[in-house]
Image (cartoon, rainbow, N blue to C red; front, side, top):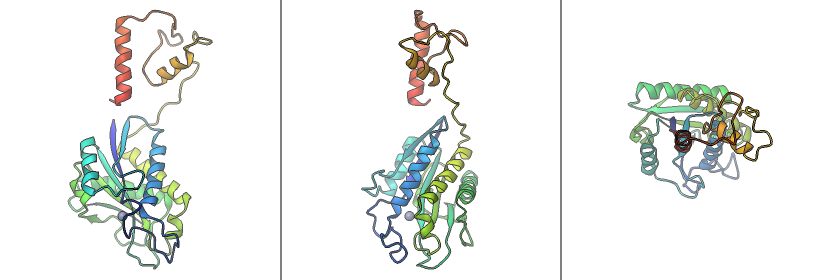
Length: 256
Ligand SMILES: [Zn+2]
């Protein structure tokens, strides 16, 4: 079970964190851009198994969760990787920018490896390599310093760059960035994709009232057949079989 803490930086109402008005009259909020990508990452990840994810920001955007609270949530969750998603500023209406991936000044080797994976996958998926001389900087950022697990912060382009703004505002960019982040998380967490759902495995349940429940529970790994092809839906279960089923339900729910 690979545990991920995902952090969409800031909140909708956080002062100053928005695109440059001269490039985007609607002054899109930074959190909105992060949230859009993070939501897509969460959706993409559903095709993988054996991971658990929490968002440490307020997913309504209404409040800007303090950095201390974000870190505390991740630490208490026992996350094995912390990813903070941001967008950059500092070009002041000029050209250039692009994606950068940040690790802490005293990052562990593991964090450095993950920092590079995030960068490579984001660039491969979006092509937004920009013109930064150091696209893999080390910075003494709070969430990277105070988290107890490997941590990376990605800046998905510049909100005040004439080059980046039209790109990062687009839905397609968010899709691509989410695709890159998802792939990076799958590599980092060594995630494997879920098997295809198995239907019509058991020959003796067609027409049975419990058929869909049996197939669903089989796909969840809760129940099994009496043989490869038979479920024996009307046979009485033993106390031992019930114990195994109960344990499988608990494991499914807790993800352990
Ligand atoms: Zn930010």
